[in-house]
Length: 309
Image (cartoon, rainbow, N blue to C red; front, side, top):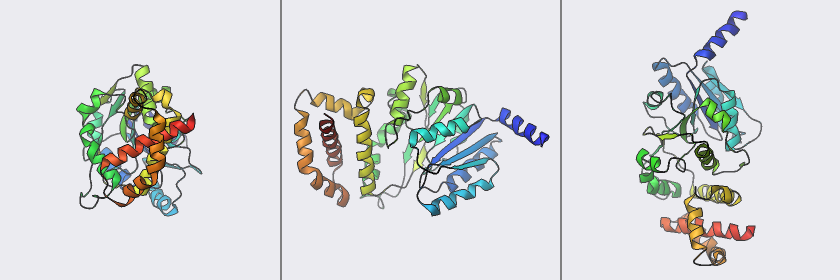
Protein backbone atom coordinates (compact mmCIF):
# COMPACT_ATOMS: atom_id res chain seq x y z
CA UNK A 1 0.00 0.00 0.00
CA UNK A 2 2.85 2.35 0.81
CA UNK A 3 4.46 1.78 -2.60
CA UNK A 4 1.12 2.36 -4.31
CA UNK A 5 0.67 5.71 -2.54
CA UNK A 6 4.25 6.70 -3.39
CA UNK A 7 3.71 5.76 -7.06
CA UNK A 8 0.52 7.83 -7.19
CA UNK A 9 2.30 10.77 -5.59
CA UNK A 10 5.19 10.59 -8.08
CA UNK A 11 2.74 10.40 -11.00
CA UNK A 12 1.00 13.50 -9.67
CA UNK A 13 4.29 15.38 -9.54
CA UNK A 14 5.03 14.40 -13.15
CA UNK A 15 1.57 15.29 -14.43
CA UNK A 16 1.72 17.67 -17.40
CA UNK A 17 -1.89 18.12 -18.47
CA UNK A 18 -5.34 17.64 -16.98
CA UNK A 19 -8.08 17.26 -19.59
CA UNK A 20 -11.36 18.37 -18.06
CA UNK A 21 -14.73 17.64 -19.66
CA UNK A 22 -18.07 18.71 -18.17
CA UNK A 23 -20.92 16.56 -19.46
CA UNK A 24 -24.65 17.05 -19.61
CA UNK A 25 -26.92 14.66 -21.55
CA UNK A 26 -24.20 13.89 -24.11
CA UNK A 27 -22.13 10.81 -24.99
CA UNK A 28 -18.46 11.74 -24.58
CA UNK A 29 -16.91 8.29 -25.04
CA UNK A 30 -15.55 8.94 -28.54
CA UNK A 31 -14.01 12.25 -27.50
CA UNK A 32 -12.34 10.72 -24.43
CA UNK A 33 -11.00 7.79 -26.47
CA UNK A 34 -9.55 10.17 -29.07
CA UNK A 35 -7.86 12.34 -26.44
CA UNK A 36 -6.39 9.37 -24.59
CA UNK A 37 -5.00 7.98 -27.85
CA UNK A 38 -3.42 11.34 -28.72
CA UNK A 39 -1.92 11.78 -25.25
CA UNK A 40 -0.43 8.29 -25.21
CA UNK A 41 1.12 8.74 -28.65
CA UNK A 42 2.80 11.91 -27.35
CA UNK A 43 4.09 10.08 -24.24
CA UNK A 44 2.23 12.69 -22.22
CA UNK A 45 1.75 12.33 -18.49
CA UNK A 46 -1.92 13.22 -18.27
CA UNK A 47 -5.28 12.67 -16.66
CA UNK A 48 -8.81 13.00 -17.96
CA UNK A 49 -11.55 14.03 -15.54
CA UNK A 50 -15.13 13.87 -16.76
CA UNK A 51 -17.92 15.28 -14.58
CA UNK A 52 -21.54 14.53 -15.37
CA UNK A 53 -23.55 17.52 -14.20
CA UNK A 54 -26.77 15.78 -13.24
CA UNK A 55 -27.72 14.40 -16.68
CA UNK A 56 -31.34 13.27 -17.02
CA UNK A 57 -30.78 10.73 -19.81
CA UNK A 58 -30.00 7.42 -18.16
CA UNK A 59 -28.85 5.69 -21.35
CA UNK A 60 -26.28 8.44 -21.93
CA UNK A 61 -25.03 8.12 -18.36
CA UNK A 62 -24.72 4.36 -18.76
CA UNK A 63 -22.71 4.78 -21.98
CA UNK A 64 -20.36 7.31 -20.38
CA UNK A 65 -19.57 5.00 -17.46
CA UNK A 66 -17.57 2.86 -19.90
CA UNK A 67 -14.72 5.41 -19.83
CA UNK A 68 -13.86 4.33 -16.28
CA UNK A 69 -12.14 1.32 -17.87
CA UNK A 70 -9.17 3.50 -18.82
CA UNK A 71 -6.69 4.04 -16.01
CA UNK A 72 -6.06 7.70 -16.91
CA UNK A 73 -9.76 8.60 -16.63
CA UNK A 74 -11.64 9.74 -13.54
CA UNK A 75 -15.42 9.86 -13.97
CA UNK A 76 -17.69 11.80 -11.60
CA UNK A 77 -21.49 11.79 -11.51
CA UNK A 78 -23.26 14.59 -9.67
CA UNK A 79 -26.76 13.90 -8.30
CA UNK A 80 -28.11 17.24 -9.54
CA UNK A 81 -27.15 20.00 -11.96
CA UNK A 82 -24.93 22.69 -10.45
CA UNK A 83 -24.45 24.80 -13.60
CA UNK A 84 -21.82 25.52 -16.23
CA UNK A 85 -19.71 27.74 -13.99
CA UNK A 86 -19.70 25.55 -10.87
CA UNK A 87 -18.97 22.31 -12.74
CA UNK A 88 -15.85 23.81 -14.32
CA UNK A 89 -14.66 25.10 -10.96
CA UNK A 90 -15.19 21.63 -9.51
CA UNK A 91 -13.15 20.04 -12.30
CA UNK A 92 -10.31 22.51 -11.74
CA UNK A 93 -10.25 21.72 -8.02
CA UNK A 94 -10.11 17.97 -8.73
CA UNK A 95 -7.24 18.35 -11.21
CA UNK A 96 -3.54 17.76 -10.53
CA UNK A 97 -1.57 19.06 -13.54
CA UNK A 98 -0.19 22.61 -13.86
CA UNK A 99 -2.10 23.09 -17.13
CA UNK A 100 -5.82 22.41 -17.57
CA UNK A 101 -7.47 21.76 -20.93
CA UNK A 102 -11.22 22.34 -20.86
CA UNK A 103 -13.34 20.90 -23.68
CA UNK A 104 -17.08 20.75 -24.18
CA UNK A 105 -18.36 17.20 -24.24
CA UNK A 106 -19.95 17.31 -27.71
CA UNK A 107 -16.99 18.51 -29.79
CA UNK A 108 -14.73 16.67 -32.24
CA UNK A 109 -11.02 16.80 -31.44
CA UNK A 110 -8.63 17.49 -34.31
CA UNK A 111 -5.76 15.06 -34.94
CA UNK A 112 -3.16 17.46 -33.52
CA UNK A 113 -5.26 19.13 -30.83
CA UNK A 114 -3.02 18.12 -27.91
CA UNK A 115 0.30 18.51 -29.71
CA UNK A 116 -0.68 22.04 -30.75
CA UNK A 117 -1.54 22.96 -27.17
CA UNK A 118 1.73 21.53 -25.84
CA UNK A 119 3.58 24.36 -27.58
CA UNK A 120 1.89 26.80 -25.19
CA UNK A 121 2.47 25.15 -21.81
CA UNK A 122 4.15 28.34 -20.58
CA UNK A 123 1.07 30.48 -21.34
CA UNK A 124 -1.58 31.54 -18.85
CA UNK A 125 -4.69 31.12 -21.03
CA UNK A 126 -4.89 29.77 -24.58
CA UNK A 127 -8.06 29.53 -26.69
CA UNK A 128 -8.10 27.16 -29.66
CA UNK A 129 -11.40 28.17 -31.24
CA UNK A 130 -14.08 26.19 -33.05
CA UNK A 131 -14.72 24.94 -36.57
CA UNK A 132 -18.29 24.65 -37.86
CA UNK A 133 -18.80 21.27 -39.50
CA UNK A 134 -21.69 19.18 -40.70
CA UNK A 135 -23.39 18.56 -44.02
CA UNK A 136 -24.87 21.87 -45.31
CA UNK A 137 -27.71 19.96 -46.99
CA UNK A 138 -28.58 18.16 -43.78
CA UNK A 139 -28.51 21.27 -41.59
CA UNK A 140 -29.78 23.90 -44.06
CA UNK A 141 -32.95 24.51 -42.01
CA UNK A 142 -31.22 24.34 -38.64
CA UNK A 143 -31.17 27.73 -36.94
CA UNK A 144 -28.06 27.21 -34.84
CA UNK A 145 -26.05 25.82 -37.76
CA UNK A 146 -26.99 28.75 -39.97
CA UNK A 147 -26.19 31.24 -37.19
CA UNK A 148 -22.80 29.65 -36.47
CA UNK A 149 -21.92 29.62 -40.18
CA UNK A 150 -22.87 33.28 -40.39
CA UNK A 151 -20.52 34.03 -37.47
CA UNK A 152 -17.74 31.76 -38.77
CA UNK A 153 -15.51 34.61 -40.07
CA UNK A 154 -15.25 35.82 -36.45
CA UNK A 155 -13.85 32.46 -35.29
CA UNK A 156 -10.36 32.86 -36.76
CA UNK A 157 -7.53 33.43 -34.29
CA UNK A 158 -6.77 36.79 -35.92
CA UNK A 159 -10.31 38.05 -35.36
CA UNK A 160 -10.49 36.67 -31.84
CA UNK A 161 -7.18 38.26 -30.90
CA UNK A 162 -8.56 41.69 -31.84
CA UNK A 163 -10.91 41.42 -28.84
CA UNK A 164 -9.18 38.69 -26.80
CA UNK A 165 -11.22 38.94 -23.61
CA UNK A 166 -14.63 39.43 -25.23
CA UNK A 167 -13.90 36.52 -27.61
CA UNK A 168 -13.17 34.00 -24.85
CA UNK A 169 -15.30 30.83 -25.04
CA UNK A 170 -15.34 27.82 -22.74
CA UNK A 171 -15.69 25.34 -25.62
CA UNK A 172 -11.96 24.76 -26.08
CA UNK A 173 -9.30 26.42 -23.94
CA UNK A 174 -6.23 25.70 -21.85
CA UNK A 175 -5.52 27.57 -18.62
CA UNK A 176 -2.80 27.47 -16.02
CA UNK A 177 -4.23 25.76 -12.93
CA UNK A 178 -3.10 28.48 -10.54
CA UNK A 179 -4.79 31.11 -12.72
CA UNK A 180 -8.03 29.14 -12.78
CA UNK A 181 -8.04 28.64 -9.02
CA UNK A 182 -7.38 32.34 -8.41
CA UNK A 183 -10.04 33.40 -10.91
CA UNK A 184 -12.83 30.78 -10.86
CA UNK A 185 -15.96 31.05 -12.95
CA UNK A 186 -18.67 33.17 -11.34
CA UNK A 187 -21.03 30.69 -9.68
CA UNK A 188 -23.78 33.29 -9.38
CA UNK A 189 -24.55 32.25 -12.96
CA UNK A 190 -26.49 29.02 -12.57
CA UNK A 191 -28.39 29.17 -15.86
CA UNK A 192 -27.15 29.11 -19.45
CA UNK A 193 -24.95 31.84 -20.84
CA UNK A 194 -22.23 34.44 -20.22
CA UNK A 195 -20.13 32.72 -17.56
CA UNK A 196 -17.36 32.76 -20.16
CA UNK A 197 -17.71 36.51 -20.75
CA UNK A 198 -17.47 37.31 -17.03
CA UNK A 199 -14.43 35.04 -16.83
CA UNK A 200 -12.79 36.97 -19.67
CA UNK A 201 -13.58 40.24 -17.92
CA UNK A 202 -11.99 39.00 -14.69
CA UNK A 203 -8.84 37.99 -16.56
CA UNK A 204 -8.59 41.42 -18.17
CA UNK A 205 -8.99 43.13 -14.80
CA UNK A 206 -6.09 41.05 -13.48
CA UNK A 207 -4.01 41.73 -16.62
CA UNK A 208 -3.76 38.03 -17.45
CA UNK A 209 -3.08 37.54 -21.15
CA UNK A 210 -5.31 35.39 -23.35
CA UNK A 211 -3.62 33.95 -26.43
CA UNK A 212 -5.88 32.92 -29.32
CA UNK A 213 -4.52 30.25 -31.68
CA UNK A 214 -5.78 28.18 -34.60
CA UNK A 215 -6.42 24.85 -32.89
CA UNK A 216 -10.14 24.36 -33.31
CA UNK A 217 -12.43 21.62 -32.15
CA UNK A 218 -15.19 20.68 -34.53
CA UNK A 219 -18.90 21.18 -33.99
CA UNK A 220 -20.97 18.96 -36.26
CA UNK A 221 -24.18 18.29 -34.34
CA UNK A 222 -26.77 20.94 -33.57
CA UNK A 223 -29.83 21.12 -31.35
CA UNK A 224 -33.21 21.54 -33.03
CA UNK A 225 -34.63 25.02 -33.58
CA UNK A 226 -36.99 24.91 -30.60
CA UNK A 227 -34.20 23.94 -28.19
CA UNK A 228 -31.84 26.55 -29.63
CA UNK A 229 -34.47 29.27 -29.27
CA UNK A 230 -35.12 28.29 -25.64
CA UNK A 231 -31.36 28.41 -24.94
CA UNK A 232 -31.20 31.81 -26.64
CA UNK A 233 -33.94 33.13 -24.38
CA UNK A 234 -32.28 31.64 -21.29
CA UNK A 235 -28.98 33.29 -22.21
CA UNK A 236 -30.72 36.64 -22.70
CA UNK A 237 -32.32 36.34 -19.28
CA UNK A 238 -28.82 35.81 -17.84
CA UNK A 239 -27.59 38.82 -19.81
CA UNK A 240 -30.41 40.91 -18.40
CA UNK A 241 -29.56 39.97 -14.81
CA UNK A 242 -25.85 40.73 -15.25
CA UNK A 243 -26.19 43.57 -17.75
CA UNK A 244 -24.39 46.13 -15.59
CA UNK A 245 -21.36 43.87 -15.23
CA UNK A 246 -21.31 42.81 -18.87
CA UNK A 247 -21.57 46.29 -20.37
CA UNK A 248 -18.70 46.78 -22.80
CA UNK A 249 -18.32 43.02 -23.25
CA UNK A 250 -21.44 42.28 -25.23
CA UNK A 251 -22.49 43.64 -28.62
CA UNK A 252 -26.21 43.34 -27.95
CA UNK A 253 -25.85 45.46 -24.82
CA UNK A 254 -23.87 48.03 -26.81
CA UNK A 255 -26.59 48.10 -29.49
CA UNK A 256 -29.32 48.58 -26.89
CA UNK A 257 -27.38 51.40 -25.22
CA UNK A 258 -27.11 53.17 -28.59
CA UNK A 259 -30.78 52.64 -29.37
CA UNK A 260 -32.02 53.92 -26.01
CA UNK A 261 -30.74 57.39 -27.00
CA UNK A 262 -32.68 57.31 -30.27
CA UNK A 263 -36.02 55.79 -29.35
CA UNK A 264 -37.78 54.59 -26.19
CA UNK A 265 -36.94 50.95 -25.52
CA UNK A 266 -40.57 50.37 -24.55
CA UNK A 267 -41.45 50.67 -28.25
CA UNK A 268 -39.15 47.75 -29.08
CA UNK A 269 -40.60 45.85 -26.14
CA UNK A 270 -44.09 46.52 -27.51
CA UNK A 271 -43.00 45.26 -30.94
CA UNK A 272 -41.86 42.06 -29.28
CA UNK A 273 -45.17 41.59 -27.52
CA UNK A 274 -47.03 42.08 -30.81
CA UNK A 275 -44.73 40.00 -33.05
CA UNK A 276 -43.26 37.41 -30.67
CA UNK A 277 -45.36 34.45 -31.75
CA UNK A 278 -45.28 35.15 -35.50
CA UNK A 279 -41.48 35.50 -35.27
CA UNK A 280 -41.20 32.28 -33.25
CA UNK A 281 -43.32 30.36 -35.75
CA UNK A 282 -41.10 31.61 -38.55
CA UNK A 283 -37.90 30.71 -36.72
CA UNK A 284 -39.15 27.26 -35.74
CA UNK A 285 -40.77 26.16 -38.97
CA UNK A 286 -39.14 27.93 -41.89
CA UNK A 287 -35.74 28.97 -43.17
CA UNK A 288 -36.16 32.52 -41.93
CA UNK A 289 -33.54 35.16 -42.70
CA UNK A 290 -31.10 35.41 -39.82
CA UNK A 291 -32.13 39.05 -39.48
CA UNK A 292 -35.39 37.75 -37.99
CA UNK A 293 -33.41 35.86 -35.34
CA UNK A 294 -31.29 38.92 -34.59
CA UNK A 295 -34.39 41.12 -34.37
CA UNK A 296 -36.07 38.55 -32.11
CA UNK A 297 -33.06 38.65 -29.76
CA UNK A 298 -33.06 42.45 -29.70
CA UNK A 299 -36.78 42.85 -29.01
CA UNK A 300 -36.89 39.96 -26.50
CA UNK A 301 -34.01 41.54 -24.57
CA UNK A 302 -35.62 44.99 -24.51
CA UNK A 303 -38.85 43.33 -23.35
CA UNK A 304 -36.89 41.74 -20.48
CA UNK A 305 -35.36 45.10 -19.56
CA UNK A 306 -38.80 46.70 -19.45
CA UNK A 307 -40.12 43.92 -17.20
CA UNK A 308 -37.15 44.45 -14.90
CA UNK A 309 -37.98 48.12 -14.35
